[in-house]
Length: 326
Image (cartoon, rainbow, N blue to C red; front, side, top):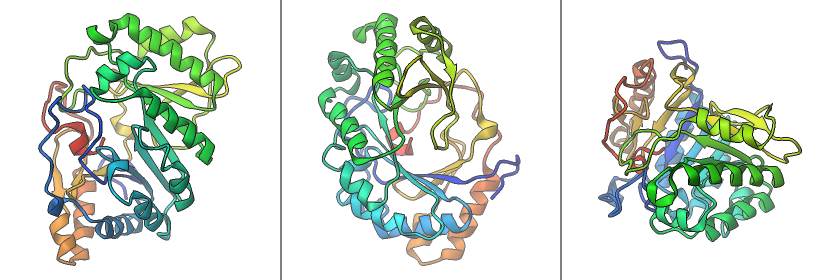
């Protein structure tokens, strides 16, 4: 499917839950969010039906998100059902990694092809402050389990949080160096992602990608590198002798909306045209009525409604990121 701006849409992000076992400062308030009643969350069989329809319309690359998708019971079974769908080209998942150690091998055997692990610092105290509850040992164990299970690529998503209580820019610089060293030693693809001003952003300070690149250059000459398979807009580099790569996703300072190839499905069955609040279409009710024609029409409507670019203002605060699906 092509939208009104000539973009071919092939990528659907599917949130399976609004729940998360962490409380990251840029994602939700410390007290959490009002949870959606289970009756309003799409059942697994409904997700499979929607993804089957989406694949038939050309959205053949699927990523499972949350909240934290691994907190939902029997997530391995959902992966297995989706992996069997004819026409599926790619099935991936984004996770904070804290539950991955116990599930990585089963997910790989079920048909999951790639994982992105969100990890914003390698400093234990800073990690505890950013996540408000997390233990970095669990996330690191998840990374090792993903590599051991044979996932390739394994991407690490880093949103640098230059808060005063996590060391400010000095702490962020230490994180850049630590993640670069991790990518040097291990076959990991570390992407530094600018914080998006969406939902509850806490009091974190914005760290531009240009600043991150300057810190990387201080560590050694950067060579342009071919990125691993995926759907994102990262620019990748390799430091001398590194087993992995480092990348930049300058989502805030550099606009790449005209390359956006995705739609988002929330856990409650709302199809969003954009990460920002530019409209959504409810799919749950027509799906539960068995009206597949209405669901197909809604997908086509969403494609045509997809805006050319995000809103000009960047201070919007609405739904938390975990409610949108990332």
